[in-house]
Length: 221
Ligand SMILES: NC(=O)c1ccc[n+]([C@@H]2O[C@H](COP(=O)([O-])OP(=O)(O)OC[C@H]3O[C@@H](n4cnc5c(N)ncnc54)[C@H](OP(=O)(O)O)[C@@H]3O)[C@@H](O)[C@H]2O)c1
Image (cartoon, rainbow, N blue to C red; front, side, top):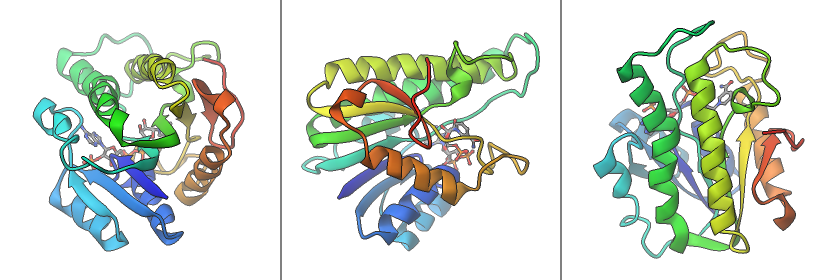
């Protein structure tokens, strides 16, 4: 299998690289800086430098993957932004950073992959149930929530355009002990990633355009 992971310098992205490399898959993965690229190299992945929030960097993906065919693509890069509890209006720099990374980034990256997908390829964006409107019981981190709701919309559109060509899903990794999730989170990184890999492997064509928990349970938008 040939796997592409976007945003893999640490946390869930780096663990996806480690687990796919360990099972013998060919992995291409991106990081923004040299230490991140070195971590990918050390795991045996092909490292590419890419910042999804930078137009020139993100639009440069098509060239290094020209001629490649991926069985699985995971768009993982994300930022949380301000840790708010109520309705604190975000400043424009925070708004731009979160929306550019979590929404514009996938809108830049995904269209470039259209000719690099194996038949029936699995394409996942790492979303969050914090982006679900029907499951929502709190407004904490409302900028992040808005960005993941928008990401879910982006994924749905990709699933419509690529129907019959790829199985495209949004995944919630669980609340995971990464830099973003914090030490008090529910899940260890290897367990969350193992779950998501299993869920991706078991996807059927009818799952195209769906939203799934790490363990494969369907989630409401
Ligand atoms: N952890 C959780 O509990 C949880 C729950 C729900 C959803 N998620 C989602 O899961 C994904 C991974 O999160 P994580 O917990 O592993 O977070 P993390 O440890 O903070 O890692 C975030 C990753 O995204 C990369 N990234 C950030 N901005 C980027 C940009 N502009 N271009 C390219 N890469 C960029 C980071 O690269 P740098 O090292 O260069 O910053 C890093 O590799 C995110 O989309 C997050 O929203 C996480």
